[in-house]
Length: 214
Image (cartoon, rainbow, N blue to C red; front, top):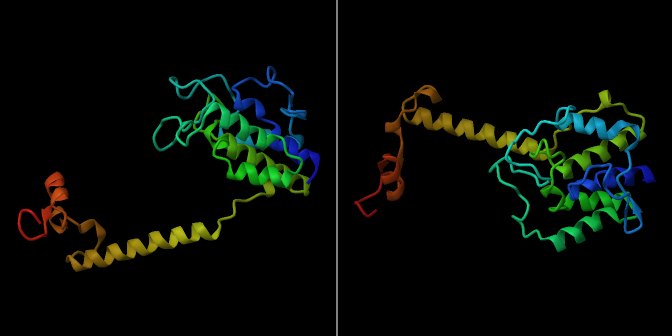
């Protein structure tokens, strides 16, 4: 991989410190960072995750460069033992590499990179996956492909998830028939029982065990 690919992995180094692109240093340990990515790959990647316009915070109470979790709404920074010392060391390892292949592997495995957002205005976005997407787009552009040529490839893990959900639905249909219904919509509360006494007490679902103490 060429120098341009390393630029892709280093182009948003300033977002680790929350500095603007203009105010951020251009060097980290003798390595040039925060350069513009060739072929418009950065703009294309950003357009896939957030609106192009900036200036409006989508979460008024959150205004720093740490990513918010979509599941909890809380910052993920520090949840995995992050500290200033470890972050500085891990960020350096992401940026100060001479091989784009090594850079890719480190970004892919990095918990620290996943703790930062792509934009303060859109704190649920991920700097880690934005950077990986920029590199993927640039690699494809260098190979002669255009943005319109690219497609999302569903891998075997997604196929497995689909099979799991389909099998679950089929099992639910079997249970519906066993309860005397001809569709899932026929399920009623009286069809539910539990063998756990505490669940029965909490939910009001009929207890299927023997005796009050189970």
